[in-house]
Image 1 (cartoon, rainbow, N blue to C red):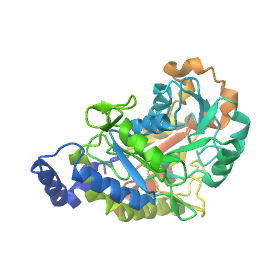
Image 2: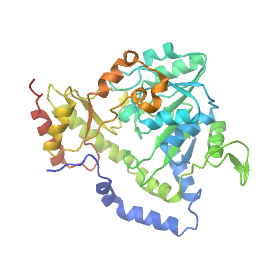
Image 3: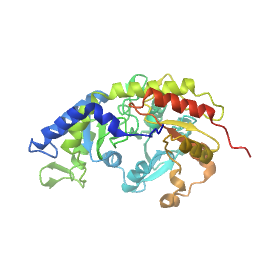
Image 4: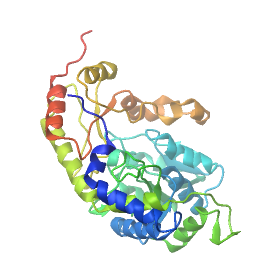
Length: 368
């Protein structure tokens, strides 16, 4: 049995007719950029999240960059976030000239909210919590800290479409929420796409302008902006998929529960869960001590996998100038050597799930 880590084609087969109809509708509309499809998707996604506004952009990276620009982040401003994230989170901060300040994580892989205050300085302008793997951060505590110090919150929801905290969807807590629709996401396009959510009218207007060269009206820029527009074809496809998102997330949760209940191997550490939070399970990330040996075992049994993410940001050459020491981020460094993502997507078959569980339960550490 050869089990892929992810295969978008399985999902496509279930919605093929609707997707083709949406693409055909756009192509015959005469409008390929910033038309009715984009507006409909923005309205529907805002309603889904529970925010007043949604602004479609080119990617999740651009969503963060534009959100930062909308709150007037300037060079040398400091943004508090984590180092166990995808590079785009940090590259967006650096595109604004700002400096990421890293806080260590907890066993659930999310920012340790109890260490945020000690990282705040006079230069701190925002906290950028990453709802990693689909697991919401402790946003209520983070919100209290932000209010106390009068700093902004920009949520990185790139992996958390549909995840909730105390019944409310992430992306609706901060001043702005940022989503990626990269093809592997719970709500994925067939190319690059992103979205910003907010209930602040002024911030929404700035984001709408920034994504289109800073223009408020055609051919006249009132601020420096970018070319970062969500095209009509991707918007139409995403709106087809949006109505299935909760159903797909339910299936992800079902698979995750199988794993959590049936994987009984002392050499495998399962992800932490919390009743206050509804995990979207974009990824199911386990920890193992002998990762290379474990990956060899997965390959031998034809089970796909991923590692998200093997190199903390400050350990990468491009960001060595940040001068972080491993001791400051002990959990971040330790977990980066142990994490493995096993297959979890809605179209995974029950037989495949049982096979994965069976093989993981038989895994043993390499004898020394």
